[in-house]
Amino acid sequence: MAIKTTRAVGVDIGGTGIKGAIVDLAAGTLLTDRIKVATPAGAEPDDVLDAVRVVLDRLEVREENIPLGVAFPAIVKRGRTLSAANVSDAWIGFEAEHFFEDGLGREIHFANDADVAGVAELRYGAAREQAGLSILTTLGTGIGTAMIHDGVLIPNSELGHLQRAGHKKDAEAWAAYSAMERDELSWEKWAERLQWYYRHLEFLLSPDLFIVGGGVSKHADQFLPLLDLSTPIVPAVHRNNAGIIGAAALAVA
Ligand code: BGC
Image (cartoon, rainbow, N blue to C red; front, side, top):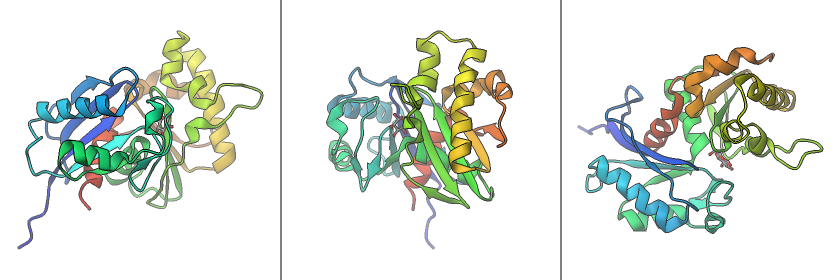
């Protein structure tokens, strides 16, 4: 009888923190505490690899034969990272999946961080059985997006980099959670920026549902009620753990 894998490790590399946990794939929940280390300054490949090793050591899974999914904050195509908004430029055009596999001495599944969060919400959360177009946005150091249409992920949407007419800063530089912190905005002032952003997405893509992830989604009641949109907007069921859960889920085909 084939043994079905029920556990996998998810590691979610972000612009500010690198988080990991062992995930129960049947339930889509964390089986361990979440381990978090700071993303090394400059986020150079060797330093990020070392930090991922620390996370795996603290989870005591470095030697274990358990599937591992790694999520990264950049465009990821066929294992290569093609952009670098909040990490070192060394990642642009870099064979990142091979780099992690060589450095960790094991296979991994490698994908964009927002896309894997979208997969987590599709399998275990707010996008489950949702018809039409769901757009998950992660509000963190940057803005990541995952587009899911009738249960199918359209990867690498990068809608955090929409340009604002007449402005130098793109959407993420203006409206990410890091912009709220940087500019010391109240919830109301930040919500004005989010209002512009989600309205713009709504106008361009006519979605059926917005899902809001990222660390700040735990405070969703402070800012989602301030938005006036035609599209329903809900927090990610798995909040900031969606990246870990989705990365782990994708590690098992
Ligand atoms: C990157 C995306 C990423 C997002 C969230 C953006 O700056 O371009 O690839 O998903 O940040 O981390």
